[in-house]
Structure formats: structure tokens, C-alpha cells
Image (cartoon, rainbow, N blue to C red; front, side, top):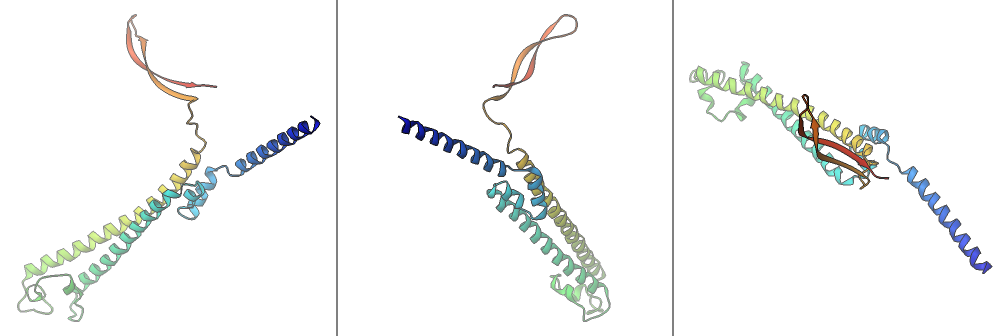
Length: 202
């Protein structure tokens, strides 16, 4: 009998120490919004890793990858059209990079290479087309860089909100309901209305 009591006491102490250790480890692994935010600022995606939302990582890096590719592509095209536009308007025959971008016969629009056969209206048309290309790719290059900055802020905000809502109570003890009620109106009249109520069960 004495041996049985000793075994029960030892088991209770072991359970208490295990519960204390578990509570301590839970306190250590509590998700802090400030830390999640700082990690997301330091390196994109680290806030999501800290929040243990690993499934978000592909979306974070896919967004950055697409925007960086767009910025790189539009930058290269902007440089290409800028050089072509400058070459088109100078008087040096050797600078003819615009020939790769204009599909028409150069003899119909180029006053430098073909001064006798070119058409001034064609020259003006292709000059405008090259300038429009410069403006187009410059605009989308700038929008791509703005998109990178915006996506960076979105990932930081996501990490912060995710960490802040980790301890949000979604149990059955908390209930929010819309209920029909009778509302007293001026003049002694009553009318139908809607009441928003919250109930917390202990």
C-alpha cells in the first residue's frame, strides 16, 4: 500500500514537471509580431518562416521573381530603344542599331544611308514609333520597380498581421451574431432593425 502511494506521488510530480516544462517551451515559442516584422524587413520570406507559414514562401519569391524579371526585361528594351532612337537621329552612317527594330526597307525612311530615295513622312513615322517605344518601356520599367517595393511592403505587412492574429480567439466561446430587434422611433412609433451582438462564454 505504501509502495503504491509512493508511485502515485512520483507520477504526479513527473506530470507536474512535464506540464511546467511544456508551458515553458510554449512561452519560448510564442510568436511575436515585432520579431516577425523585423525578420521580414531583413530578408523577404523570413517573417513567414518565423510564423511557420512555409506554404507562403513560394508566393513570396514568385512575386519577387516575376517583378524582377519584368524590371530586367523592360530595362533592356528601354536601353535598346533609346540607343536606336539616338542612332536614328544622328548623322553617322555606322550607328544603325535601329535597323534591327524597324521591319521596313531602310531605303524608304533613312535619310543618312539613302538620302536620295527616303520618304520624309516615313522617316517621321518611324521616328515617332521609336520614341513611343522608349516611353513605353521606361514607364513599365518604373512600374516594375514600384511593384517590387510594393510587394516587399506586402510581405512585411503579411508577416506582421499573421503574427498578430496567432493568438486570436476563434473558439466557440466567442460568438458574434446579427439579430432582428424592435427599435423605438420618435413619435412613439416602433420599427424593425438589426442589432449586432457579441457573446463570450466562460
